[in-house]
Length: 153
Image 1 (cartoon, rainbow, N blue to C red):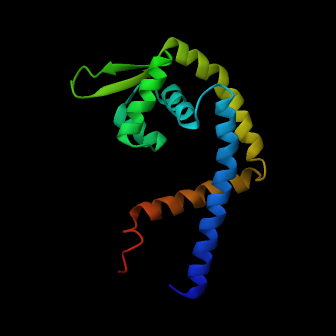
Image 2: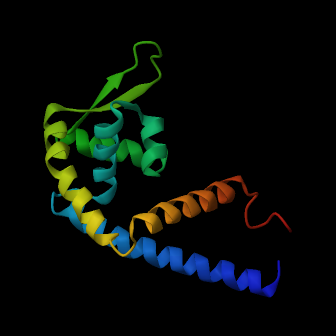
């Protein structure tokens, strides 16, 4: 890798991290208005849009550890927003699903959250959003396929 390539990679990383932090701050603040953490909101949103999910699938969607997903589902279950359901075909598997109260809450607050993100991301026009999505997806796919930071060691 040339010095210029390295410089560009480092700059891109900093710009991505700062943009993510700025946007995530707004999203977390919006979730907090409803007494939810950003990750709890993410769980409710995933279940709202995808339906019941195996805990492992849900963990991958919201990017937390297996212990983290257990803790978060426990918290949402205690609040009456999520319930666990046993898989009928595999006794080892457990699904998370919205309760009627959880469904009502996320159905009420999700449109407001989507509008919040629309306002926060208004710095790009439609074509730029499509291009940014394409490029960031390409970057993420390549990073996931990479052997990591130590592949040349």
